Length: 96
Image (cartoon, rainbow, N blue to C red; front, side, top):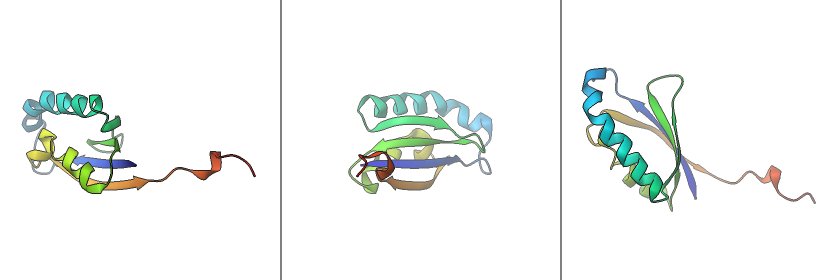
């Protein structure tokens, strides 16, 4: 099943200089999750600092487990705003 996770940087408590040392490890862990097939896509948010991530997982708990491995989440610098389960859109299926 696919899930969309919406993440926001905690910019009220942390500055850009606080985030900087963790960003290489964050990118590496995201690449690891992608290589394992857990993450399908990653986007940077265009409205506020943060990102969106598409996951392939059995359930919400598994997604939260993957997110917990991200250095920014571990450090409390990235908040999980939402985890949304996604169902296939039926409008592209065969016409009856």
